[in-house]
Amino acid sequence: MKAIYLKEMRSYFHSLAAYIYFALFIAATGVYFSVICMSYGYTDYAQYVFSNSTILYIVIVPILTMRLFAEEKKQRTDQLLYTSPIRSGSIVFGKYLNCGQTCVAPDYVYCHSEIKDEFLKQLRKQIRKQFGKAPLDNKNYGKIINEKHFNRIQNLIDPAKVICGGNACPETLQIEPTVMDQVTFEDAVMQEEIFGPVMPVLTFDSIEEVIRKVNSMAHPLALYIFAQDKAICEKVTSECGFGGGCINDVIIHLATSEMPFGGFGESGMGSYHGQKGFETFSHYKSIVDKKTWIDLPMRYQPYRRIYDKLIHIFLK
Picture 1 (cartoon, rainbow, N blue to C red):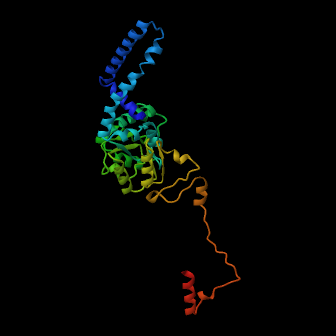
Picture 2 (cartoon, rainbow, N blue to C red):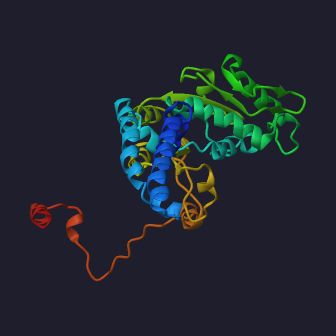
């Protein structure tokens, strides 16, 4: 509901709707003041004007919002507003931590087409906020581990699709926090794990499309979903195959020692951390402790027909 409120408030002030509403409200309260306070001599303006003008909200607010909700349902974006909080700060942090050289960094972002433009705007804002206008001059910004890896990442970047960053310094093995738009799954950057400061942004129109695509590829070590609708979160986490992840955050599941950490399918086998770590790196011996006071001769040769009949009787 907060997402809808913020979106519609912004849309109001980009049109005449808000200004017409305020003009009507001021006119109505002015008439109310003249009729009630001036005519009857009431001095408590707030009590007799604002408290009794609640009827304006009861009548006008539904009139203003019914059209908006009808438009959202018609365009099928009502669920989008409920399920797409933009948390660009944590995404930027997780992606560019150690210049993207962490095994659980978000490799790419799958963004709903309706909010992509706003999301990209927030990404650029957060990158500048966290790393400054010139990230390569930031003494706290890291570098790529070696020249071979530096060149590999550089070859994955398509300059025509870069909307933020893209600059590099071969002498220091540094690459700016880079964002690529209009990316498809056929691009070079989507053919292998990036393991660097390059964020491709892809778009989708339905959550079913996302689940099908994610499950058609190698199972990721981590998956992060940003949504407010618990049903959407449950659907994605239960139907997609991945090692571990977060809802409305990134990476922090790795720092929780009480939670097992590990991969699934192509991304790894087993898990560790806490008790699971001891279980993973321990070998459990299977031992049968048989008593000596009885032994069944029917398992030994020569086999007899009576033994066969007894076995069938006991196994029924």
